[in-house]
Length: 468
Image (tube, rainbow, N blue to C red; front, side):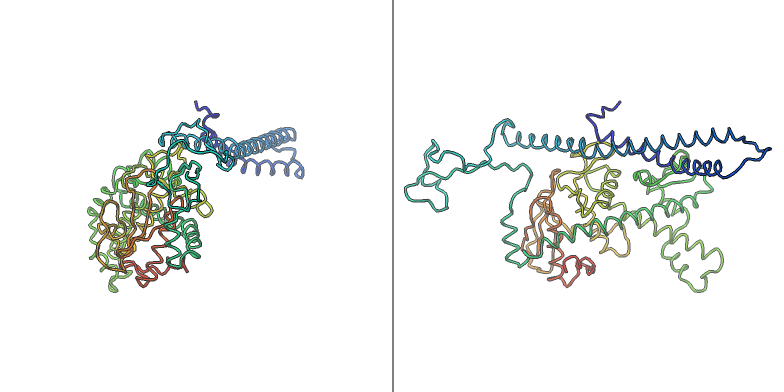
């Protein structure tokens, strides 16, 4: 059994499931109760009626009690969920943050029980360090005359990676005249992710999946068992019937491709027949050609959609889909954390799952890759023209119009860090939680000012509205 005191997330999931069940029961039960009350108050039973007045009273009272009890349980669940979210889950998050801080302190070689002064202003003004100060170690800031010791500095700990002022990026933004607009652009990128990009990907993903399963069911009617695409079961939000989950054959993408060959799909010939005016709307040959063209298009689209949720080095497609849904539903990516992720089936995030920064950068790179592949050819790949991973060398060619994302720490499971390569020049992006959004804004600025609105073969006019 779960210990709900130590696993409030598990308790929250159980309460939400229970609340949904009560909600499903409460609707029809309330309707029946209202009908019985109206019947009891305004309809007089006939003498030969099957239900006597006393029996009707008993049934009405029972339904009313059941409805009242259901409402009580619903309010109780809702109240406990609210309490968990405001108390226990906050405490759980604080506990996780404390454990993470202790771990980082331990890695830095500092005991967590060591007291660190918040400020050195209250230290005795006559304090002097016991070690000598040599001329070669003198600081490069001005020193008052007759003062031979360096000023004491508070101990600074980098508890959160890159959580400090980035002077290099700030100076770069000022030199390019971007310091007044860059943060507004970063906010626009966040809004675009949560309001447009992620919802559109997931909506098209579901539509393609439903159409593919419908076509598979139609094409395998003559087989012993109908087919359903195996990837359907990776997404918990897709409703699957008991019959489909138990008796349908779960077909992989390779099985679907072999079925297309078995059905005689020849995309070029079928497309020519489908576009032929002489065959249009005339007989089964045209309809079969249209079905085969549709089948091949669905397979191509499915292979492209799978790339959005297939992050190299990770095998957790269910988590990736669920996390993208959660980020898409949050207000301006309020749940986004660059160096961690979210909960999945009451399990906490671990390094075995991609961080939010890995997720959002991957789907953006897939967008650029697909935008340069208008024929939906799954084998074509433009990722080498999109991102440079260290230690791969930055191209030494002087092409000012060319631009890449430069990932400085590709092997890090903690937090990827991106910069922009513009020709031979490296544009530094802000470090920390907003690094990805700053890099995307700089990328779009380069495309707008140096590439005439195009990235390779892709027209980026819609994306450039984010930095207008």
